[in-house]
Amino acid sequence: MNKDSLINRNMSEDKLRIDKIKKGTVIDHITEGYALTILNLTGLDESPNLMTIGVNVSSNQFQKKDIIKIEGVFLNETQMQQISILSPNNSISLIENYKVIEKKKVKIPKVIKQLVLCANTTCISNSDEPIDSEFNVLEEKPLKIQCVYCNRMYKLDEITFSSKGKTEKRVKQRIIL
Ligand SMILES: [Zn+2]
Image 1 (tube, rainbow, N blue to C red):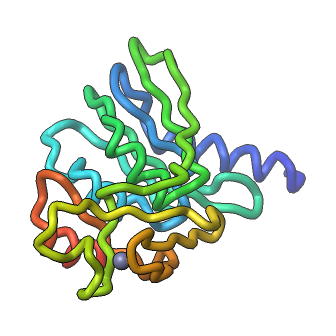
Image 2: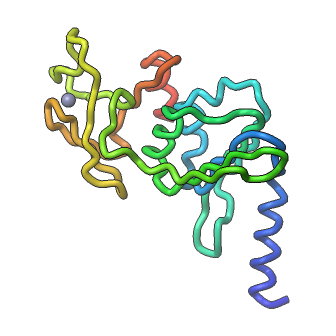
């Protein structure tokens, strides 16, 4: 067996390991190792629906990726933005009757509102004022964002996410795994 056929065989085995879904969402090309963080942050981990999660799946000869398939679930705008922040190369496919009906390449927004918290305790976005957090995206890969109120800058691993439907404390605890 030559090297090429060996690689092809391994790739098809990888595909087989993750079954097709009838209706729902496939989040593909997730940055290696980020699938579980995405599930936690988006709240998909609390879904009772069938999910298949592939971690460190061979994407090509040199790269690995994570992949999530969720039966019967379509993502909302907030969830897609959260995914784009964590994993800028993602592609999201909507599935009906085992076929892709729509493919989305969700880009990171130029301005991130509400989804991320500023760690600066004296920042006005953390005060009692009714001001939502807001960050300008300075660089996408690797991610670098800046608070519009206090100008503090954050890299991806320094970000504290907020999440609707989950308490802030719980998200913080679960993201730092
Ligand atoms: Zn700030």
